[in-house]
Length: 102
Image 1 (cartoon, rainbow, N blue to C red):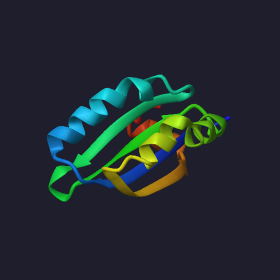
Image 2: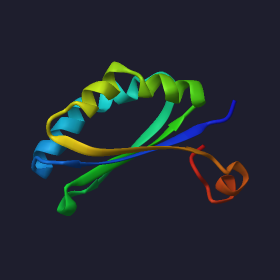
Image 3: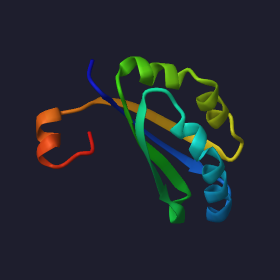
Image 4: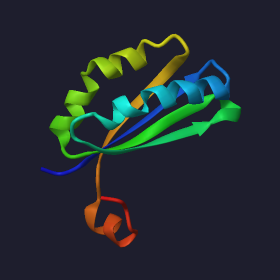
């Protein structure tokens, strides 16, 4: 089984401080996701855009995550919208050369 990448992008309608407080509260729930090796949180506060890059142990873990109550609650949050989720395979050999945290 090979690892999988998930990238997400979305917009938010609250202040940067409110957004930070929201994600600080959610961070442990994401850390506890089975099969999620790591998550990098992203923000472009001046554009009210955010997102993430996730590394999953395998496709099964990624698909389970996408169907989880945690994802459903984020997608339904009234301050978040315009979601884009993209799954990607990893080019392992080249990524190892460039020190990817795989």
